Amino acid sequence: MQFTFRPRAAHLLLAIDLVGTALFAAEGASTAVEARLDLLGMLVLAFVTALGGGIVRDLLIGDIPPGAIRDWHYAAVALASGAAVFLLRAHTSGIDHWLILTLDAAGLSFFAISGASKALEFKLNPLLATMMGGITGVGGGTIRDLLIGQVPKVLRSDVYAAAALFGAAITVLCLRLKVNGVVASGLGITGCFVLRILAVYRHWNLPGAG
Image (cartoon, rainbow, N blue to C red; front, side, top):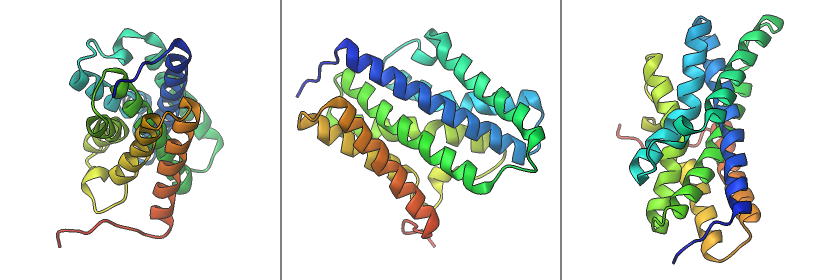
């Protein structure tokens, strides 16, 4: 089944991408605050958290150079969000753990859906489009965790990548059923976000090796 993205759908995809960029950049910068990095470290972490997954996705689907490199808006949003966290940190006693989790879940949700939608735009089949959504959602966070010396969330017994795949699958399924793009994206974002937050709150884990 082929999907044709009209200009309106392209604008929706860009909006979702930029919102996800801002959310993940803020989350990455907040993680940098917890890790006691300096301003440059915060901006680097904001940049890679926000754009790393999308860059990996674009390389895999053949969109070269990646959209985050071609369009300056992505880098500007990521760096501005990181700088905002740096400026605001002086007015708070610390970064609340649940705030970071919420930003992370929201960024994961927006990026999983934008990744799956862009993969469909490049004529990938539904299964691979869902996988691209997962890669977009977890890629930047994986690079972030490696940079600060943590085991990436995607490798832990945690409902993280699974939530991204779940949200991406909802969107792909809805688009196959010819559901309106805004509705399909909204359902996917909501599904991913709710599953991720519930998993953290109720301590849901995938089966572990040990």
